[in-house]
Image (tube, rainbow, N blue to C red; front, side, top):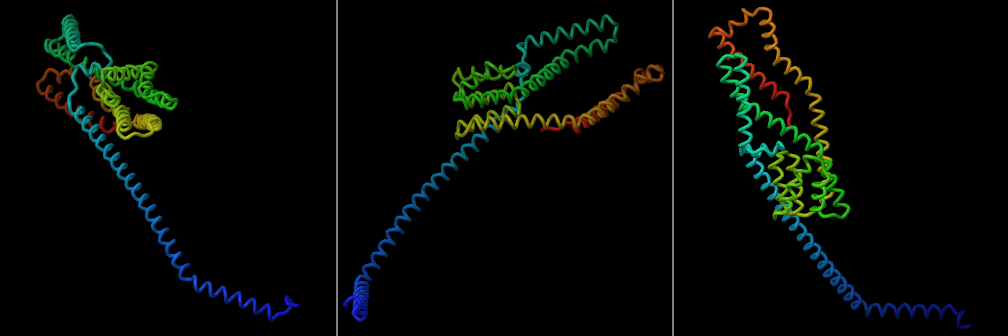
Length: 335
């Protein structure tokens, strides 16, 4: 049979292979040209894609560079303002506002003068020496009221720092719930505790007269000159200039402020022993002087009656003041 003849099958197979080889030889150049063309097209497409990617990456780098420069300029401007404010001597009106007092400078001076006259009257009734009657009321008139203002300022700032992280958390939660920043600040001005409530109320009032949020927050440092308030103003200003996730930034700031508070408490606890030692050493000469006066008054009174004793007291007071100043700087740590 035809199908069973191996010679015929071999001839057919060789014919097919020969035909395929001839076709491949004829079409080889066309196939190679097509491959080269496809390869060139792919390279062109890849080059176009790479060019687009490079342009997009370059645009992103330029945008990031512009944002970084904007943030740097903003930080430099804020630092310049803060340095100028720190170099300027604060007026009595600003210190009264920082202490939370509603007094005017004229009333403050009037009350100080009346208090000094009252002290002078008490000393005159007690038949104090003329030098004491003239000197002590003067010191009380100009020294004690200013010291009271400084004490009230520090106490108010301490209360502000205790409540400020909670106010930042309230702003963060309000922003995450969908409220704009202005409404979140108004919420703090209405719901927070004093003195945070009063300071944020000033921010709201500043916005009502036309200031932006960043400028209003920057002005907060005039009434509350603290580093924590400066951090808050910087975060708000950077967000207004360069954008970003404000709720996350304020949440991180609240966490940092709480950590700073813990660190301050830890440093205060560790330095308490040194402060107690400094107080004891500073008070020891006065205690010894009092005990010697109680046991032998004539031995101690020579320091107050003899001119040489006056010089000794002046020198001792000067050296004591220098020692107390040095010990105070040794046990005070800035964080």
